[in-house]
Image (cartoon, rainbow, N blue to C red; front, side, top):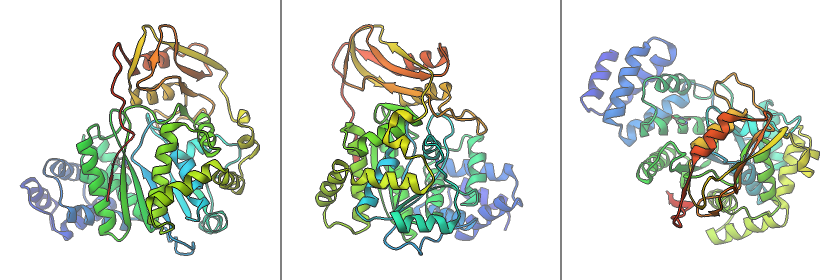
Length: 433
Ligand code: URA
């Protein structure tokens, strides 16, 4: 087989055969196919798309390019959750212990953040001593004992995706639905869960800005998961503004703990309950959605979910004093308020700009070798639809610099203030099965 023929076929709109897709993925991963031919095929896929079958073969071949995690020594039906990336998204810290509290084992492999979205692992490392590197046996033992463990993703899960993603990044071929779906699902499938709940974000701060594109991506990922033997569903949720009020690392852990202790931070609590209910249903713990939702809400209010979180922190070596007394988590040296220059209603809070402003403070990485500052971040004082007076605080920046001008400027750009009461976006648009 010749790579030029595979490129020609896709360029002419043909459906690639299983052999052609395997030839491409295996050849690109082992270095026998050069970047320029791989880039040409990616661009042809970008324009001509892929059928469901082609995308499933692409995904499975990427899974087979590396290690897969065998979770069978963990008793029970393992359900994983994955978000396509958002700002202020700390649902993992709530959903993990919450579903574990009703008996669903959660064996989570998570990544670090790059760019404007934070990573679960970086946020967790705000807790002194918390260790995300463990042997496979320790990971399995933790899940069997307390039903929850979070480990850093090993470099050898779907290495084909790692190489292809780097090429897509520099060839303007990232935002192709089959390529995103294959990339995300290859890592999820290699991580070994029996069922998968996807949180597909939509809106200004998401990969997919329109609901139509978000639905298409969600459907594609659900089809791949189901086609490859994992029960998969997707919840499409809003990312037209950050989730909750806190953006950063330690302050996101703090907000998640507040919800785990029953505080009603509406969007964060509601989305966490929705994702958890879907996970518990897939695990077969409840018969109806209503039953699942009610029991899970009860475990937020009665402290059972918080107890699981506490046990998880302790089991992974974290300092639980920081969880019992949240003021012991890392804190920045200065709190700086950014004020509204005119009165009105908050019409928009561009999540991506808020994420970038937090990154400028040191909460995120501009390049993969940057160090994270766990104490810095942003607290929103208003959300879309709220009334604001001139001179009232829009946000508080938690900064180690006295005058973080770049972040202040970026935050100001993020807010749109209108004289009329705006439309408040829905939180959950749809569940795709
Ligand atoms: N996240 C991924 O892991 N892959 C993509 O292609 C896009 C987002």
